Amino acid sequence: MAMSAMETGGLATCITPSRSDHASLASSRQLGGSSPAPRRRFRPAMGPQRGAAMGSMRASETGGKAELGENNAPGNTGHLTYSLGLQPSNYKFGVAPNSLRKTKIVCTIGPSTNTREMIWKLAEAGMNVARLNMSHGDHASHQKIIDLVKQYNAQSKDNVIAIMLDTKGPEVRSGDVPQPIVLREGQEFNFTIKRGVSSKDTVSVNYDDFVNDVEVGDILLVDGGMMSLVVRSKTTDTVKCEVLDGGELKSRRHLNVRGKSATLPSITEKDWEDIKFGVENKVDFYAVSFVKDAKVVHELKDYLQSCNADIHVIVKIESADAVPNLQSIISASDGAMVARGDLGAELPVEEVPLLQEEIIRRCSSMEKPVIVATNMLESMIDHPTPTRAEVSDIAIAVQEGADGIMLSGETAHGKFPLKAVKVMHTVALKTESTLSSSISHSVLSTATQAIYGADCSQSRMSAMFASHATAMSNNLGTPIIVFTRTGSMAIRLSHYRPSSTIFAFTNEERVKQRLALYHGVRPIYMQFSDDAEETFSRAISCLLRGNFLKEGEYATLVQSGTHSIWRQESTHQIQVRKVQG
Image 1: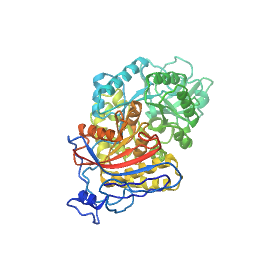
Image 2: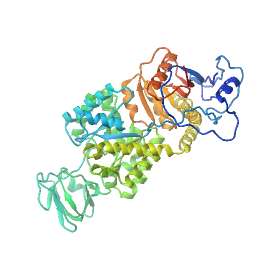
Image 3: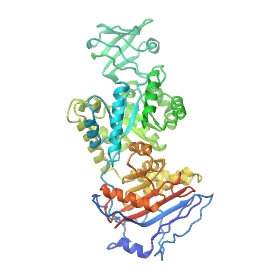
Image 4: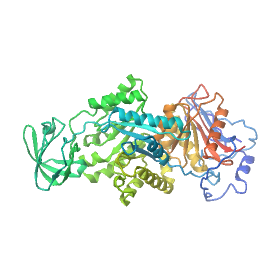
């Protein structure tokens, strides 16, 4: 049986399964009916390794118009036509969206988790990306973590952990103090640009232009707002303040001026040394702190290109200056992080949830991954259970469509790092299970309108087939299996948020590791054969061995088209296959 479209332009239609095929698929069910049959919950089990094609759609890009033709597969003795991938929705193919979590978890590695045992346990608990916070530790300690993660990846057959290097950025911090200084409401306290000062009423800052950047009446926030002071006056080297909200001032605390950003370069000399360290170790992502405009992103990407380094740039949105430039910053980047700690310090706290939603929306519209970070399970640094508000915070980020959610101190120096990961995994998984398929349908509807209103470039063709593959998978209740050398088709599929998991097979290790961040993508390394059919069969066998599929279920297979794997021309191919012996 076959479902086929030969295409050389921007139009595609389907020639659907024959009547005999319909009969075999429908079995005891009728093809008609006003309401779809309920989907069965996916329960993985072992099974045979061969797969038989049930249907396919193919487009070969060779010109500017469409040519439609029948697939010459045996047994195609009749036709029933319907809109691509949308009908009939009452087929009960046996594979509902499976129980693999789609939202990825980023874990910061620190003293609580920097051993081989803990890296392995974090991976088993649900970590997808290991974050190196370059504000702490030295290259030797970070090298140890990188080596451990790479060792895990080399030994793990069905899982992969990506590595993200997070730059320190131009942080303004207070100086060292021999012991915590207690600040009380109403008292006078000073910050000076003189080095090495530490007394009961004055402490140094590490930024020479601090006096010039602040004005009388500005609100200074310490540790993201844990303490606050108002500027009353200043001299050539000292800012004199009154304490509004007191607390204990410890060494090297982060300082923000509400509504302002420091006039420092986004990438400091230390950052460049750390970036070179990342190039040498072939990390997967840079998270660049305090990005204010697109210029710094282009500067970093030019440098990476000169080094022939295949590392993606994630911009951290955490300064007031970045907000007016969101569109250009995200467009220049490979993804974004909503760094809510400093963002909430520089902007009114009530604006942070709205900005989070806006950043996620913009990233989605540009097919860029987005991570929500900071304070997600802050209480679990010291306590074994989260607050109910923290649980809701995770759920909201998942509902809004974040690709990743991040743990910082919870896993870096917290008392319960594994429990924190398990809580995040459980909450995300439960939230995903309740999300309406209308979210995916809305994304698809918007994308389809944009696609058909545009030209027939390779990019548009890829987007169209990713959209249709998602629609087919959703309506038939099948997981998606994609074959890709660059990761581009897997990323496009992730953007459309299919209900089931995307199993992305690639023969490039770098691509496999990078795809670990993308929503709903399960990357798997496999060498491709010159024979497409053999590769398809091996992929299905791999999923059977891993208990991701079982005999009798169906899967949607997608061959990436921008960089063709088995044909010389750019080719897009979608197949629906039944797993059988």
